[in-house]
Length: 189
Image (cartoon, rainbow, N blue to C red):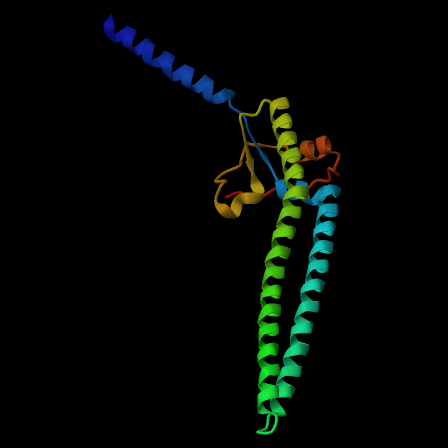
């Protein structure tokens, strides 16, 4: 009697575990494809590219100024003689100080430009990422999915197997108002 009771308890636990596993639905999404289809991402990219070009132009102007002053100092050094040694030496020392100051200004300008570009990327891209994440969550809840894997991150070995999962990329694109053209499914591992 005890053996039969134990058998039914074990069978009941096994069936309960199988039912619980059967209720969990898995989906996948290609965030790379979603981002590529959003006009907001293209606009943000253009804004960041323009800022980068502007900052590069500013740095290049400083480099050109540095190179010009260096050439002047090198030409001045060639005129050094015993007769004008004292005067030329003073001018060369002043030029060296000016070149060091300008070199520091270039380094600071590069660091500041990188910081401004990074800040702008954060300002523009973070809200888009949050919007995409919210859309993925909304679609996953609508479809009653327990897990959603990003198939664009397969190179990081985050996804081992996708057979049987539901691709929700098109629904997320639709929710975001992006073009919902079909893409090739990610390769299965």
